[in-house]
Length: 325
Image 1: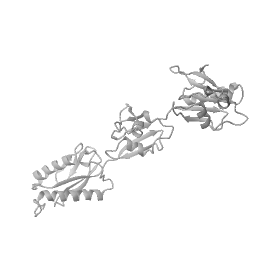
Image 2: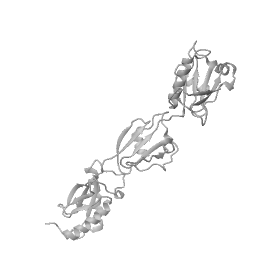
Image 3: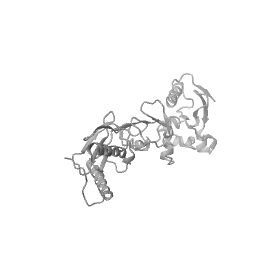
Image 4: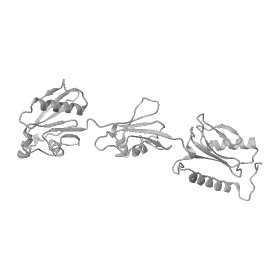
């Protein structure tokens, strides 16, 4: 028969403190999913969570029960009750009333704890070290997901233009990860929701392209204040007996006029040997620097360069480009 009364010399308030302390300790030891840093009492239960129901000195009333897809649990001796959307304190209060009314217990000490949380998943994609699906805990944030990805790919990711998409929504929520990680602004460090997708795009414009007779042609990050000599340096310098620095030129897209480029000629030799600083052209994001091998680059060289430029800027076709001197 169920005991209907707790008998003892310990005052009830003191006893409650002891009981809930032991219950919490048991929960932490009994489950690898217990979370000491998470505010369990504020969490609202969801399907697939697993809860533990206990009543002091009533060993028959004890069970670990998963929350069903319908949001109900089968509580011992009192049947199904709706717990989805409720805190554990609210469930404890409801069970207290049921055990008093149905089992005639006098002032039962009811404990409800969360043994494990449903598996919540979010994805991080784009220019990151690890593009992956990530299992997270309630209370985890965008920065948790960002950290799980290993962070952005250096000099490639556009942290300022990250986006967050919630499950079932087409809306892309702008996220400035640069402000979070560099400036310490956590105003957009939203709590994660099941099915979230965080995307960190590849930076497209904040780069320069260095091609031609240079040791290491390729695409490089743009840095504020860069000049032509910086592009030559990161490109590894000249190739002896092949490089014609005096005929260097830069293609720069004309603002507001897609596919139209300004050609800027630069005699780099005059800068190096004659200290003509006007030839050390200040670069802009998206500039494309070409260092030819001969006095006049042939048509094949120019077409190859322009095609590379279009791949770099994702404009598409070489045909239709307009150059302006």
